[in-house]
Image 1 (cartoon, rainbow, N blue to C red):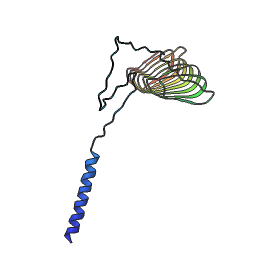
Image 2: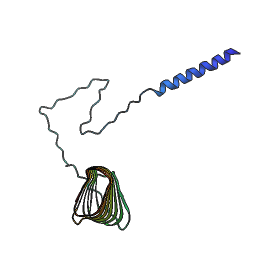
Image 3: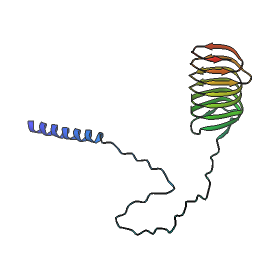
Image 4: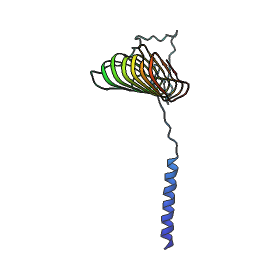
Length: 194
């Protein structure tokens, strides 16, 4: 009666040990990037190679083609710009512009923007006039003709306006708002307004 239990216990113990041992074997991940000069692999048989009398310099026959930056016309519709491209140009009537990502450059000088939300870090935005702008991130730079209302939730952001800001709410530290400013609610520290 005890032998079948011991046998069953032994089988379960061996199976569990095998599964645990397999779970902790590290998986090797190899990433190969394309190159202009592919490496040759060693073969089992020796080969004879000829050496040219003089080395021939590598000549590139085509120049790299610069990729155009994405351009979007809002056409009166809301638009979301994300990290799929580091640079965007938008134009047209844009009732709602959502910008998400890091290290983006947005040119919206030809756009008529209503609500603009910038969420991320190290984003640069140039725009015409905007209804309301909300910055939720750090190290964001906004250059605008004018902004009706501005909310900053983050640190070290810089907002520059040519015709001013109607009202500002600061919920972060070390932010700078340049231009004429109406009402200011500063809930942070070391912010400079005006």
